[in-house]
Image (tube, rainbow, N blue to C red; front, side, top):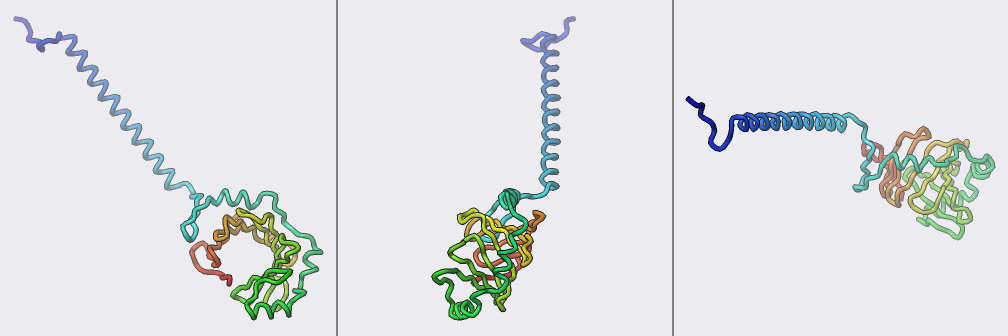
Length: 206
């Protein structure tokens, strides 16, 4: 008695078809498992790698690494002593105190910036690349040196001995990164308010 065969197919064709189906299922299983492993690896990397983006107040996002690279390009770590010696005490102290009291921020030869702690800054119009910051008593607190007058721009901040203490990278008039000399991010300014990395207010400009 002859064996019953599948209508329209020979025995060899039926076996071959089954083999193909089994191979296809096995192949799909391998692909799915591989994809699962890749997805798991990507998730692990996303969760463990350090974040290099930094979101500032106001919703502006800028890459810290990019800001750091721009900030430290060709920067100087000291400034000439003669600049420090000539500005240890505000040469226009009495006049500047009167201007501050009356809310005046510009004269024919200089700009004035006020701070909430009583300190103030002076920029002379004949040399816009240097900024002199004084305590309320007119004694020098620190000196800034600009490396450009357009945004994005950077400025080095030196102590009263002339040593670099901060690098300031201004992304715009409202967003500024501030770095330590070793490259670590310190704080940032948003509009006229300075924040630490936790969002606490550190200083205000008027």
